[in-house]
Image 1 (cartoon, helix red, strand yellow):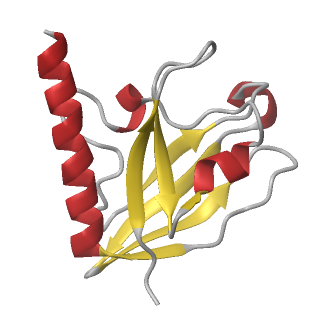
Image 2 (cartoon, one colour):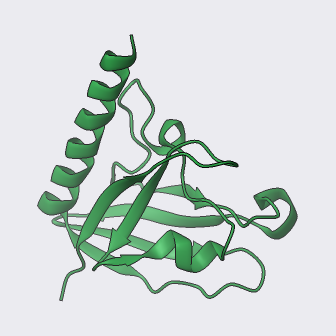
Length: 133
């Protein structure tokens, strides 16, 4: 069974700017792995204004930092995942997690659904940038 990715926005708070919320099968994988007080990816980190999202899956793959604990990633480590395309499947695997946190399982997404979700939020990000100009 394939997993399903949904990306949403969490509003800015007292410590962090607006963040992307990454849900896999309805579960917020970043919040669960960085612990209370940690943060997920900021919009400019995974969906920069130039439109070249780090979430795009390629055959060569790449490591993407998705969050950090409250004490900062430099202290306790970052949450990161290796994102790679295998034909019609996008795989998130080889998780690295902050000290003391549980490692998420590998996820496998239908590449069409995954790409559509990244395009959707990239377009939203573009509209937000245009509105702010």
